[in-house]
Image: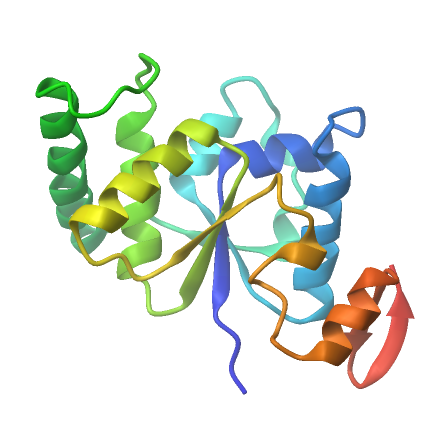
Length: 182
């Protein structure tokens, strides 16, 4: 069975490296789960650019990610998605915090939406989640948003298998048909 990947955003990267952050534990558990289950973690060049505003890219465990460049098809889709959000904002149909990141959010969403290899988008950004829900109501979106605030044991990322849920609740993840503590 082929497992589709997860696109991680900048907020995930920040939490993964900040051991004193309230969401560090969740970020670390998602990270380890994806590694152990061989779920590809994609990192966009857009997220790398955002991260390097305040962080050092050399601090990232980049070897564990596949880098996803922003391409022509994704740019077209990003424009379509951004139009929906900006029109709703202009017509006062939605209230979002004033920020310049919205175009980056929709670019990342477009990458997840267009890619045949990505099924999930992992983020702790609540404003990004609002944007996702608006887009989901207005157009077909081909990926699921997972909030980093949701512990892995409650996540749709876990397979439907009861055994996997039971093992994960004990901090055990299957790796090559062997149990391994993380």
